[in-house]
Image (tube, rainbow, N blue to C red):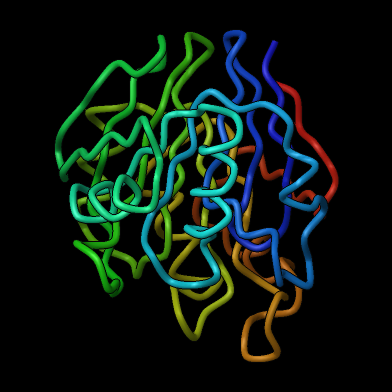
Length: 224
């Protein structure tokens, strides 16, 4: 059995297949953070979708250096992490797949911006079903193709608007991807973002009623 713990904003700690996987661990300076970076005592993989400050590259570098975790990002981001002292940086590129410490990790596109390389999403599977962290993105048609090819079991979906998709577009994304479970993220942290997931929940019930919605608060977990 796996467990997804929401750490706030777009940050997650996932326990699956005996592995600990962090995604976008923005904990320092995050008003919604459920943990401090110093409280992360062990990690196998740290996936960073892009280098904006609210996605935790600096915390990822600190945690990876301390725990010996593999830090995974797009090539240019991984090169930067290596230059900052990370011993095990893995630089994938969009469309690429690698087995890293027993976890299959696929990098897919995201439509956003970034300073180093391009923004991305990740689909990763430690043997208990694929999890798709969309990163920061707008809605795009190829989400249908991503769903058809990789068939993720769980989708972690930005819903807050302003910097990413809003609630209705995010619901359409869920209808494209067709996961079994959708978990909203990237909302409420800043005043400009949607302050609840209620509209997202409403639209998913209309557009993808077969998908189970799990809206967990920072510090809460979902077992799968």
